Amino acid sequence: MEPRQGAQAIRRALAVLRILAAGREDGVPLAEVVRTTGLTRPTVHRIVHVLIEEGIVERHARTGRYAIGNQVPELALARPRPSRLLMAANPSLQRASAAIGDTLFLTVRTGNDTLCVDRRIGVYPIQVLSIEVGARRPLGVSSAGVAILAAMAAPEARKIVAANEKRFEAYRTDVATVLGEVTAARRLGYGMREIGLVQGTKSISTWIKTPDGQPAAAMTVSAVRTRLGPRREQEVAEILLREARIIEQAIGG
Amino acid sequence: MEPRQGAQAIRRALAVLRILAAGREDGVPLAEVVRTTGLTRPTVHRIVHVLIEEGIVERHARTGRYAIGNQVPELALARPRPSRLLMAANPSLQRASAAIGDTLFLTVRTGNDTLCVDRRIGVYPIQVLSIEVGARRPLGVSSAGVAILAAMAAPEARKIVAANEKRFEAYRTDVATVLGEVTAARRLGYGMREIGLVQGTKSISTWIKTPDGQPAAAMTVSAVRTRLGPRREQEVAEILLREARIIEQAIGG
DNA sequence: CGTTCTTGTCCATATTATGGACAGAAGCAG
DNA sequence: CTGCTTCTGTCCATAATATGGACAAGAACG
Image 1 (cartoon, rainbow over the protein chains, first blue to last red):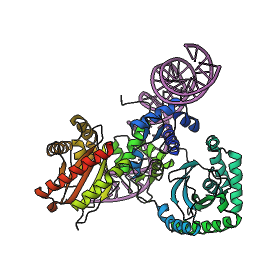
Image 2: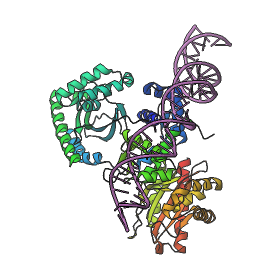
Image 3: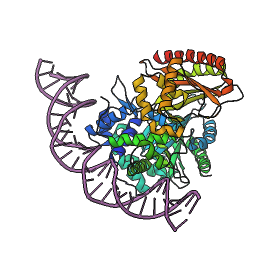
Image 4: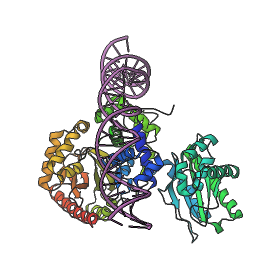
């Protein structure tokens, strides 16, 4: 049912946009877009430059990198802000942040990516602030991504991981490792990474499902590893799991 | 130099998105998109449904209308928030709002549209709140649009107004009327509408130019007409003009 | 129960997007 | 300087893609 045809160019343009979005403000060089999308260079070049003319993409004068343009947030203003999820999650994030004291993230799934949409800084003096709101990563490379994959049907998770294969090497991981972590997360009931994307950090993530059973988001605690021994890991996971269920209720009702 | 070819479909998809954006949360029926874009119905239908599959557009179950989807704000997160302009304008808006007491709007130009990006409610008990952040109109139908057109080179303004012709009738105006108001605004030094989009209101707008002389935004005061007699109009215009120059400095430096 | 509005689908056609091949620019090593 | 590698940009014959006329069916209205 999915593949409606007659719009290859539009789909490709969107694929390019998603890669550019992963580059945030700094953007992405053309060659990297070519590599990660698998399109040919003339095609990417054409798409990107048309999007520049349309104001959807910008090019940084100094670096030559391509980035999401002004007009995207302008289009986004058409939607109500803040989103349903952000409103529903707000009280839980506040409670959990107060109870745990380490940095808390809310991450959504968008296509084959995870996207950080909220961050709460805790009271403990050492905070892991590497991930900012807007950070976008291939599903699978962060503990949030692993949690979200773990909450999906195994075949779908495998499909996404396979689709992201080309992008994994930039994060020094691969399909097999990711699938291993996903399996582990299914057993545990939550996602976990002993070695976070930043050296010396550890992360714990619970998934949040929509009423129809699809995982839509993950709630993550990141801290320096020594703060998250086995005992505290258990405590933190319990808080996250409890709040995740509350958020699910808030979305559903 | 402008028209790079080989991406008709992408340009068309973006034209559709801009129309959908004008529909805000409620969205726009397909037939209206067809009318205002001038594309054929099969083409619009195909584009819109591909965009739905991609998560860029949503369809409201009850009404069948099409609206900007979840994924647009997600892509927008790639950019730093708030924007340069919003930061630069913030102190001026605060000062002007305090000094004037009526509702104040900051409106940018985006393509052939005006887009309200900030609104400040004043202290006076009767406020004109019809325009919300995110409201999008064809350039020319609001006093902000007239001001922005007045700040551009006349031929370019005429071109934009001509391009918007099809959309004017929905706002009960036409090309000749708009061009007349633009000429009047050039003489006055600011845009003005005795009859606002809402009955009984009056609006005054000053333009804000980027360092290269292109108008990028407008600052508008809207109030019930009786609040804006000739004398007060003069006062308000002076405040707006002063603050507009300050914002231009802040953008330039 | 015709009239007019809407949305959705088909498919032959030609317009459009594609990508191989070529080329220049910038960085680096010897 | 020259050769090597990496990047970005352009051309154009070709194949594949997007197009839109025609048809259809549902919804709202009088």
